[in-house]
Image (cartoon, rainbow over all chains, first blue to last red; front, side, top):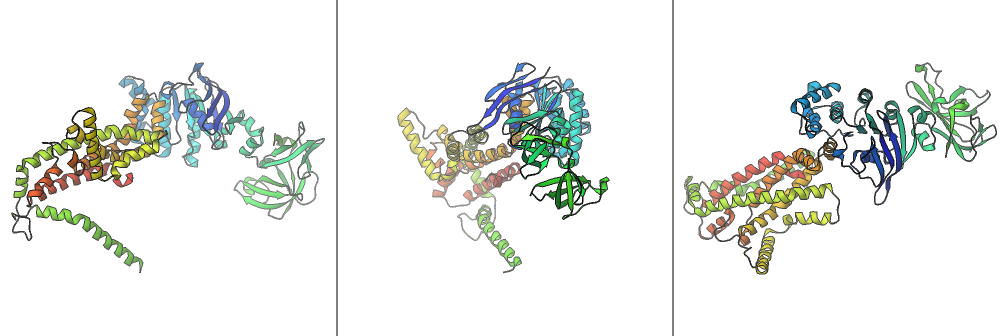
Length: 350
Length: 268
């Protein structure tokens, strides 16, 4: 069993705390994404698990074994680097064989395992190439094969897709997920890209300033952000300050809008995804808020509208474009009524 | 002035500078083939006799061997000290790091004659202190040559290390390689070109040294450069030119080879 448990780990540098009491447990075979902006401590956390950064405080265990102060070469973990880190002077096959040589396997065993590992990432035919003769995507697959061939207890991936172009990133994302699931390997995946995290992970851990801000399934984190920061990071562009009152939520700009749960009072922010906002053309009509379109940005399947209410309140609505079967495009200056279903709004602390 | 004119001027100046650098070398090689008994112009004819005469001079033969031996030892010393020092300088942050870096590069800046005199005086003091020979010994000479080669090794190897991908070492560690194995299997191969260049360059730097050696050689242990100077004191013929031509060939070859491994220009 390779359950990974981080118990209140801290990384303190002379003038700053990079990781501040992070506790996390990752089940056997689970893929957890550490998500956050640069400097949030996600990579430092990963590198502490890998043994490349000394832990200041706290404990890390793998399958019950304390590895907190073990050097990296005794941890049996596979590490995938952002820049792939293939050995430039070795062929693809030699790169993959390296970890097996360190484990003193026989030549025949090594050859067999290398072949299987390279076939798994569909690179068997490139075994004798040097890394510099491969494309970025191929290099990343070699790196993955090299990390997995040693049958590690844990797979650690540090921004494995960020050096690839959009198309390849999509393919590699699926490939990593597929291999991870077929091997059932416990994996920590560090990324700053919410889309990547949501689509590969069983569980997403959002980090901010060295702490865990929120964790949950991709849907939990995406649909019900519990803080202003997470909401913003998950692409909720409408975050409206105000306070709940009987019958709704009073925005700082004065309007009262309906919400499903009138929470415990006090200053909060109402978070509404732009996709959940509906626009009805014209000045009349019941419900919602009146506003004028300030800016319309055509984006293919959707159109982003920036709408301004008389009170000064500004909202973004993302509506299907005519190409996606939506209504005709509105233009700047048009009057609209803005509305959303109460359950589409989430209250988050300011 | 037009664009073209500026380019022509630039090209012209480049050719002049290059000519200024190369002319003495060309002249020396040319003179080494003169038949004239005393060094003079114009040549009365051409021959290879000065090369034969140079080879017959025991002082030159022995000097050449001493120089090669000394240079090989200088290579060993400068690599043994310079490679670990470069690793420490590039990979770790520690108090006094800048000072140590400056210190290691200092022999490159201090004029050879000053360094040589300083070493000589230091060795004499050491002799008095320890009551043993230092100043005229082979050991003393080797220390001095290791010292002049060291900055070049440090410079080239730190440049090589800076270009080597640190995460390759971490990858090796994560795959189960202990630190020494990481160094041996990954770090060293990655910086091999820099080390080869450093070795070749150390050899050249030691081989051509005159200023430091002149203070430090003992009886019966003259380097080639010192043998040349002593010969020039009493003779003025083309033997020296022949020896110089051979040296130009050796050093030129070494520099061209070392440039294939690591561009010297990139170390600065």
